[in-house]
Length: 190
Ligand SMILES: [Zn+2]
Image (cartoon, rainbow, N blue to C red; front, side, top):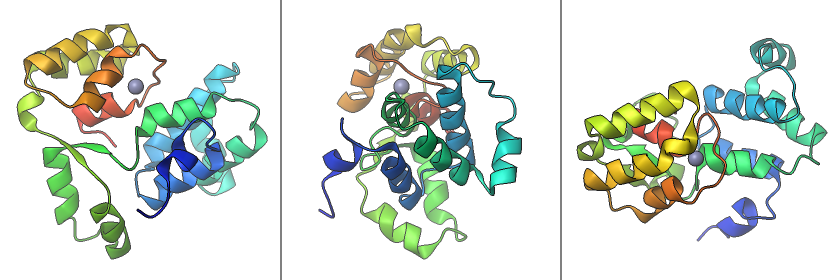
C-alpha cells in the first residue's frame, strides 16, 4: 500500500488533489480534463464552447482544470464528476486490446510504467463487447442519455460480464457525465 485511496478519492476528497492523482497515474488525458471542465461549467450554466481557447491561454488543459477547482471549490459536485470520469484510479477499467497497446507503447515514460504496474487493472475482455453492449454504449456516448445504463448492465451480463464494479456502476442510479469511465472503457476511449 502506498497510501489510503479513501482519503484521496472518498467523500471528503479535494478535487485539486484528485486531479493530481489521475495525473500521476497518467489517466488524465486532455480529452478527460476537457470533459471535466465542460461538466463543471455546464452545472453553473456557463458555455462550454471556448474551453480549448481558455486552455491555450492558460498553458494547458490541466492548468485550466486545476484553476477551475481552485476558483469554484464551493461547487461540491466536482468530486462526483471526477469519480464518474475516472472511476477508481487504483482499479482502472481498460479494454484488453487498449491495455496491450499501452503496454507495448515504447514511447510511454518508464516512470509511468512503474506506476501502472502497481495498479489493480480491471481488464475488460473483448468477449464482452457484444453488439448490444457496443450499440448501447455508443448511443449513450452520442446522446448523453444515461437512463439506459441498467439495460447496458443486462447486456453486459448476457455477454458474460461478472465484474461487480462494472455492473454496480450500471445499476446504482447515480448521476453520470459525458466521459463516464464505463462508457469510455467499453468504447476504448481515454
Ligand atoms: Zn458513470
